[in-house]
Length: 154
Image (cartoon, rainbow, N blue to C red):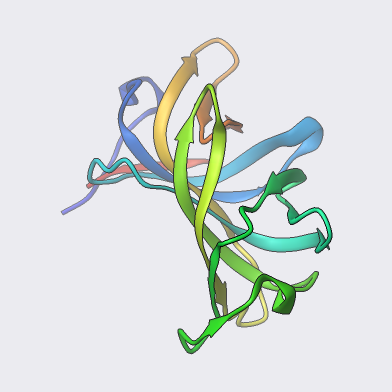
């Protein structure tokens, strides 16, 4: 059962999934926000904009994300492949942990089917809320909410 709620019903510490697209200055423009079951796992899903195999970094959602050398990468069929098989244009889901001190630390990468369209997403706990600016901090991203954003409670 789901119900539509307002921005002011969101609370720090609640887990959310924000679907949308990268915005200006490293922000994330939310089209839809849904509350989720609590978890310490954080997720980022989006298109790889560029990749640096020598430095083990991905550019995704207008951010540079470091990837540990021993990272597990799975293809669309859940077969293990190496980091070297990733390329710009791949849709990927990054799973890991987020803390303010360390940022997002990648633990697993899964290559996803794009299906011809891309909705990118963040999933994690709300770390901060700015009610005046209508923004949330989730997985180190400033998530911008506007009148077109739907917010659902599950």
